[in-house]
Image 1 (cartoon, helix red, strand yellow):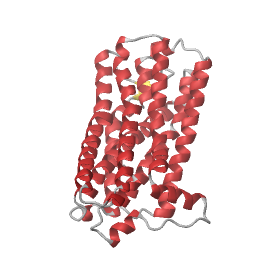
Image 2 (tube, rainbow, N blue to C red):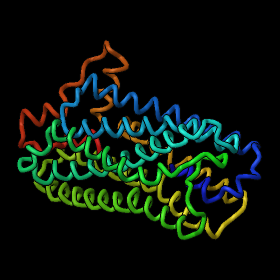
Image 3 (cartoon, helix red, strand yellow):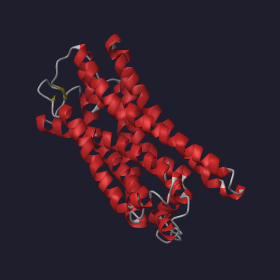
Image 4 (cartoon, rainbow, N blue to C red):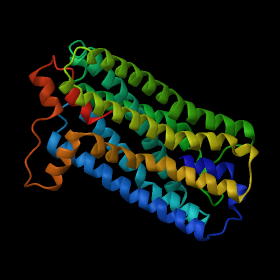
Length: 328
């Protein structure tokens, strides 16, 4: 949906745009991101369904994040086609459907990461107290509510998109007031508030781990180091991929020209590439997911020695360092 906002705000510039080496290269990069995002998130979802079987609240949320990120990639070829052809060739119904799909999964992905941040803090802050709230069944209910909230968030704007003018753009007044209102709405609900919650949860989580480090033996600190690295990676990746997009979008009213439009195209690509980041982060930082991937891709390999959910059920007094290793 962010690409469509750009088309709306810069439609006059795009009318004179011609496909050149930059446009062709950008289209190829979009398709690479699409394929990588679909493959990576399908791998994560399959690993959770087949190997982990959604045995814990954490993996339920990770599955929903992978589902949202994967579906987010489905609409990308349509966006690439519009950018490359400088027109929307798929009709009015497809315009609304793709916009709803794009916005729904964009917001669900962000909301899911936010819910997972709260879950991580509760898991470490007081695992006994919040154990009954962190069951797979309740996590599925929270996930369903999260999808519904995302739909209600984007539906009023998504249904206003129209392809009658040749581009799939919002059918709204083109004055700066409307544009600023739409951008502020998406920025606050799609970045500012979720990022504030994530940052607060992870800051509190790291403080909790720091206090516990004083009571732990040195050999027990490896999970903490893994978690710290993953926390930093996830938060930085989210901010690095989305903050430039929103910052430049807010500056679009004061800047014009093909150069600015091309910069924005690259930033839109960067925002979509965030959906490829989580599977890579899991593989780089999580021993558990590396075992899951090996078990899925190499059926003859030794199965993972237990799951995070098994650890919780066997000993609820565990501070969930193993569960936390799955995700930051």
